[in-house]
Amino acid sequence: MRKPIIGIINVCMDVYPHDIADPILEEAMEELKKDCEVVYVGKAFTMLESIRKTKELLRSDPDLVVIFFSTWIDASVPVSAIKEISDRPMFLWSIPMIEGMSTGSLVGFAVVKGTIERMGLDIPWAYGLPKEVTEVLKKEAKASQIVRDLRRSRLGLIGYASMGMYTATFDHLSVKDKLGPEVVHIDNYYLVKKMEEIGIDKAEKRYEALVERYPLAKDELKEPTLNSVLMHIALEKIIEEFELDAITIKCQHEISRTIGCVCIPLSLTVEEGGVATCEGDIHGLITMMFIKGLTNKPSFFSDFINAEGKDIYFSSCGFIAPSLTTGDIRIEQQIHEIGEEGVVFSTTPKTGAVTIARLEAGKDKYRMHIAQGVVEEGYRRNHRGKPLFPTCRVRLNYHFGDFLKNVISNHYLLSYSNIKDDLLRICKMLDIKPLTCD
Image (tube, rainbow, N blue to C red):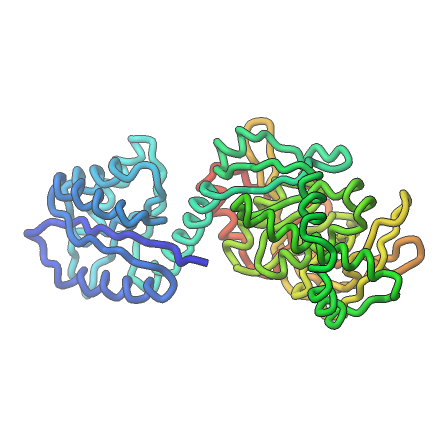
């Protein structure tokens, strides 16, 4: 995963002393370089210099442009830079007096802040020294990188939404216009055809490695498990062929019943660093892309199935990345009321603090439900008298009713990380309405 790129332009006045601000900016850039690429184009003293240096800066394709106020400045200098940048995230930074000595940074910033607000612009800003500002800049740059990468991404949709799940459906043009990615539709038959082209023999070696790590509950499950491995290989080929950044499948019930797999292939895809959801859920897929971008780790795509007191419960049909579990993983047959549906990972999710999130379309704008809690218990949920499905109990900091009033889908993503504030940054950048209980 690439590092976010931070571009910095220093707006200042040549008649003011620079010996105070220069070391501050140098310290900040050294700290930023630990987690980001930094492109610095130097000082701009005049409006025309500001325009020229901004154009130079944009050639590096920065994710975030930081305008650093080192001294008092004619407002036309930073405002001209802001107008040149216009279409990408920016951040304004001014510094305080040091030992009673002022460079005029805050005064110049105050003029510009009032100016851009009159222009109808809302640009994040900070006032402080590097130790107070650099972590904020890193987080802003990371959120901006995720948003910009999403706009350049391709999402594969095999089939369409499953079982009348309206919340899994999407408006293709709205997703492109408001969020950025292109959705590439692929027919279910193409997946079947790709599996046939590869052939079951190509799956044998991977099958042996899989069952050595995750034992079969019964010998008669070899055929559907081989099919799962074969589908995983086919998904790899499709992702490569269509240059996809993420993929989702209409699994229920055609693929799961006729081929006898989908949970294990998707679990392996996510475990190996990919982004994937089931049941054709594009909004869930984009949510997982946000989480993957922020954490570079898998997340648990699951159904919200129950609530009581301060506890809410999430479960999947057997789709979970192995690294999100306690490690006790078995390959079992999934049996629904409608009949046998192939094999799944039967296991227990691990415990720990989680951020719960879900993007969903709305009548006027996109929404994202964000909550936090602690997985206090993981277990196999009983189905038809058999412990089978990966399930976890999450303790919230508030009554489940407060969570329920914001529920926008059956599908949610659980990330074992504290990323609420990061998701809120992304919401602001994309004009997504956040739904929280805080």
